Image (cartoon, rainbow, N blue to C red; front, top):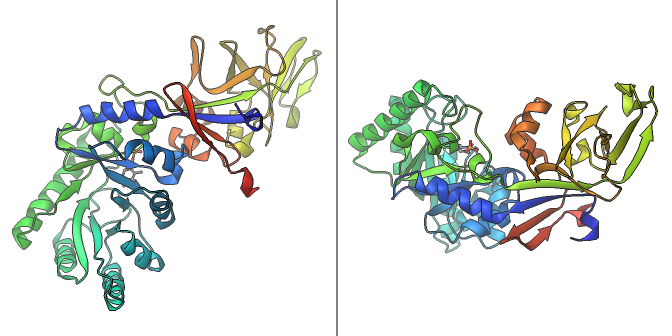
Amino acid sequence: MKEEYQRVYAEINLDAVRNNMDHMKANVLPDTKILGVIKTDGYGHGAVPIAKELEPLDYMFGFAVATAEEAFILRHNGITKPILLLGYTFPYSYEKLLLEEIRIAVFRYDMLKELAKTYASLVKEGICKKAKVHIKVDTGMSRIGIRPDEEGLRFVQKVFETDGIEVEGIFTHFARADEEDKTAANRQLKLFSDFISKIKERTGKEIPVKHCSNSAGIIELPAANMDVVRAGIALYGLWPSEQVSREIVKLTPVLSLYSHIVYIKEIEAGTSVSYGGTFTAQERMRIATIPVGYGDGYARSLSGKGYVLLHGKKAPILGRVCMDQFMVDVSNIPEAMEGDKVTLIGADGDEKITMEQLGELSGRFNYEFACDIGKRVPRVYTKGGKILYTRDYYQDF
Ligand SMILES: *Cc1c(COP(=O)(O)O)cnc(C)c1O
């Protein structure tokens, strides 16, 4: 391991990514393909390495991201499969998106007009690149998308009639597929399926790529397998919610977070630890300082609640987590020494700490915890137990 990475690093296990994906694929229909959702730099895991790992798989339809820039980064790094932008896309990026064949989610008339304009101006330059779009339908999120009603049908008709637009797909998004009670999700599924039938009736056209499932849907809603499913959180070996069954699809956490002890000392009874003196020793204690903090995305709300693993044992956090450091109790781990490896997320011996547990302890969402692991944390990518490559943002500082 590089010496610069001793302070903290996240290990990303690409074998686990592959296994999680294979297990999800085994749980959907043979013809259903998968869109890997790698927005927010792959939920903090690194979008490019994950896309490179998954792109060669036949069952991968492509990738989905949230912003034009995230899509450009993938193309820039040689990803050639379809990329879909899940959110609203601002017109400044349309020309480049068309050139790069990045798919846009459409649901506003002015988007169609702008896309047609962009197409026409490219044609003038002798470039014929149609805008490939996926129509976004709002069946219950009330976030973005056309409503599955008469007005929605008029919109779809307009998309078909717009010069320079090729309708590749149509999709919707579940608001509550991660709940045990699937009533709401099934209601959305029905609205979506009925709308697709109506489109066919009205226009005579079949849209090739229909999709609605997220990770929770992939695991628990087999009826929602269509042409494509969108795998996000489960790709990283994390769970959509505590209500989703752990028995159906086997997932392995992809990310582990490690640091090293930088200081150990004994403190007397009555000594307080960290800002605000929220923890005061009641007896003589041995404490270790870990050089990681909320500046790395290690939530401050873990203050006095979280723990790390050392020599396969739990060491609880004492007092507040600072921006760059925090202290843990090693009174019961006499073998702990300065320089020892510390596990902040991952397994050590028989113990483990998951992103879900940290989410729970910090009052945050596991998705959020993953996304927030910051730029200051280098990523180390492993495959077959070996380091494949590393990535850090040190040059940016
Ligand atoms: C983020 C997102 C997903 C992935 O959801 P997971 O719960 O992470 O699987 C799928 N579809 C859309 C539209 C999204 O925004």
